[in-house]
Amino acid sequence: MPLDEIIITQAIIERFIEKLKGCLTLDVAIVGAGPSGLVAGYYLAKKGYKVAIFEKKLSIGGGMWGGGMMFNQIVVQTEGKRILDEFKIKTMPFSKGYYTADAIEAVTTICSKACRAGVNIFNAICVEDVLIRERHIVGLVINWSTIEVARLEVDPLTIRAQCVIDATGHGTEVVKVVEKKMGETLLTPTGKIMGEKPLWAEIGETDTLKNTKEAYPGLFVAGMAANATFGSYRMGPIFGGMLLSGERVADLIHERLKKD
Image (cartoon, rainbow, N blue to C red; front, side, top):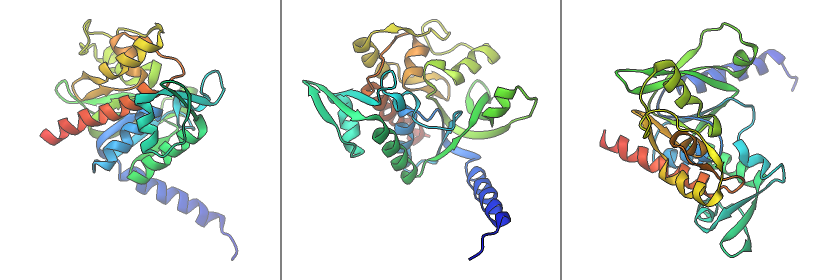
């Protein structure tokens, strides 16, 4: 059969527009397709919620892709291994309580299972603002990442969502918008982004789960964004806390939306 370049182009445009139109109104909008964002999306979609993830890079996986210093192995503790087991990702014991997994297998498997669960992922899209109604986040303002890089004056589009998750890692990109553009008080002890502390894996891993919570009405934080928002330590190339944080934020949002 001869190939028609115009049909190919039409297929890409029409299918993408269908996908985007179907995600203009969501139950949950997740910003950042790292491990916590992907895991959160997976669990929420499995519970029947309409979920989309917006990632500013072309690739997904966040810091998990590179393991530690581009040695593409990741380490999880016993608690985090439970999540990898659920995704059927192979792990190998290293020493008591420590397990390793291939970073590429982990990212691609979690992403695939999230998509199959019903999560829509939009890459190369950045979030430049939030949609707000009466001191409550109700959505996102999005644009192409290339627009941001080129600093072009191009108006964005909007996505409505009942809940938003900032899973942007160290950058806390959505929380920063709330703090800077709106001048609002966050649900932190200081009312501001408290900032990330140096590396202390044990405390950082524990605090990741403690800090996975609502940072502003309608806006939750997960993964490293949680510790950066609430002022705890980074944990380096151990990923159990990130995976468990994704599961926890999904549970918190489920409880919130179930009440509504």
